[in-house]
Image 1 (cartoon, rainbow, N blue to C red):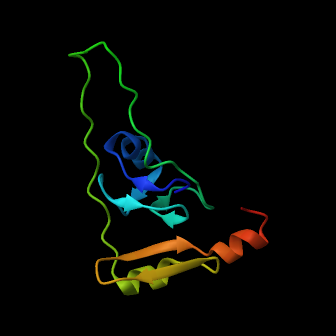
Image 2: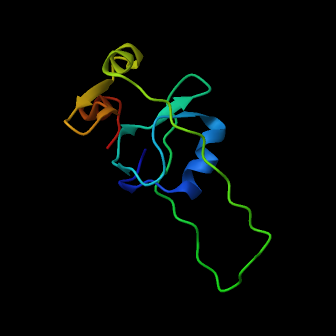
Length: 110
């Protein structure tokens, strides 16, 4: 993820076409967090907090798209999944994976 905030169903419905998600709508995320598995090799920064633009026009043709259930990852799964530039964060509430901020600075990131 390249943005911090609360994940939205609107953003995740487009992201799920590119791979398997680890999060569901309404989860607080932060910049650098790994939120899914990309179908291709390499990393894909995505905006999972993007909100739908509000308009004055109501449309009955708008269909709500369901987001697939997220893949549950145990601590062992996370440790096996990460690569050299990623970390596993363990808190009482969750187990999350993120990019190592020091490694991204070495690659020329922020």
